[in-house]
Length: 206
Image (tube, rainbow, N blue to C red; front, side, top):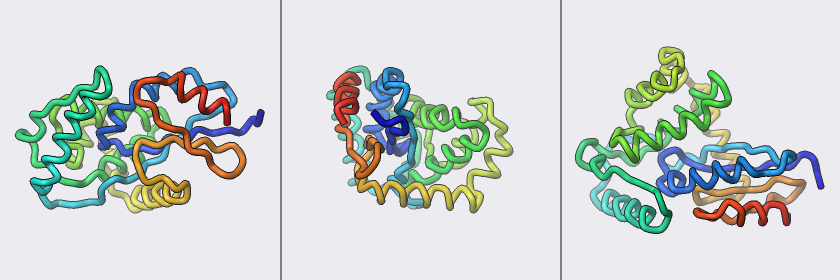
């Protein structure tokens, strides 16, 4: 058994399937062998845009939310989002928020991701808006001013671009995805939305 194995979690904080996957991924991270470290990469689902989300995309995502709620037990969505907010197909701001939060402590990577998910899916708040992301940072106890300054800094843009390139190099095209790095080549791990033990068995076999 090698001592430098890494499980890479590729996600987007505004990916609805990632929201459904979060509880079982948290379980998986808690039962991994000590020699396997977890690393997180942002996939960058949808680029910056100020345009309202097309009606066809709204219908698709609303149906996706219903599908996820029906197929992953315990996953909830607040559909008031679609009437309270002005949806935009833009997830890169939320990705940059995770990077900005991470600058104040690595533990805030997962914490900001969860704050975005809860805000989006349960509280009907729009994480495509910088002002909402800054609110999340304050609620997490971060230095909100430093967070706001970092959110759209050129270094943050570069970091997101770099992570998206890494995701491409791993051959990942869907979120969430899991990749085990243990020598070469990288090995995809099948995502199981309800069974952490099944994924653990797959990982240990590799």
